[in-house]
Length: 80
Image 1 (cartoon, rainbow, N blue to C red):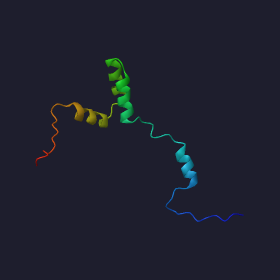
Image 2 (image 1 turned 60 degrees about the vertical axis):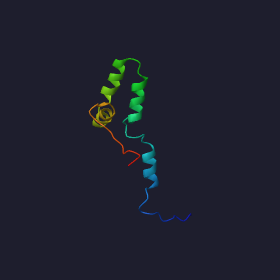
Image 3 (image 1 turned 90 degrees about the vertical axis):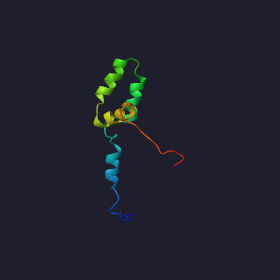
Image 4 (image 1 turned 135 degrees about the vertical axis):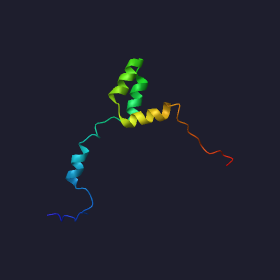
C-alpha cells in the first residue's frame, strides 16, 4: 500500500479542485464582451438593446466616465 503524503491544511483539496473546475465562471459577461456585442450590432436599436440587457451600475459609471462632457480629466504638465 502506497504511503499517503501529509497535505498542507492551507491548500485546497483535490475534490474541491475538481468541483471548482466544473463551474464556468460567474455566469455574467465581462465588460469587454458586452462592448464587443455593442460594437458588432449593426443597428442603433440593437446596440441599445444590448446595453439595456446588461444595465449595471458599473456599466453606467464606465459609460459616464467615457462620454460625460462635464467630466474633465487633466494630467500634469511634463514641464512641472
